[in-house]
Length: 146
Length: 107
Image (cartoon, rainbow over all chains, first blue to last red; front, side, top):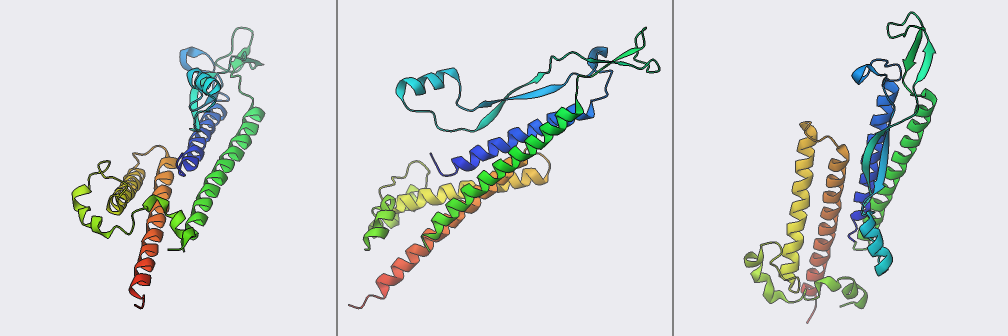
């Protein structure tokens, strides 16, 4: 394992958190979108993360051989849609309202999205700190040569 | 040589094998060099240093022209280039110091 691996692992975390931030922004931006693709309301999206080198075969080899795979960071397994049902809001003046005057609004809860934003921001800062610490460690090692 | 320093530079075991320095030019191909000789080790180290610098330059250019969608890649490339350069300059300083020490030896 080379010394730069810790920097690369932290960088993969930065990339993943940035994508999570993108998806949360998308959810917030479309919190009132009643006309999504196909005429249905916008459906909330979530990012699923997975460990790099964490496939079943590699995990099995690690357990059988006793040598765990080298850390490779995190990667995005996919972006999935939240299956929570849409909210029904009574608003007869809305052009998207049905005969009874109800509008199907997206299943986006602003409060949940705001807490997600805070969590993503904190994770991003943690990754930046890890990268900075790895860099400082390497620089300190180089100072031994002075 | 001081044992602590020679232990630290165990990877450069043949560093006093001055006769092999002349073969740097012929062993410039990366991967083909034998790390056993000092010239080969120096040559492959310089080649990897050059490749990290080139990667950093490419990443910076792509970031400036908007081709790079992930700024993290540019940051890591530049950081790795910078740290590799620090390591190379420290080793170079160390070699210069060692050479001066030899030259100042009173016989």
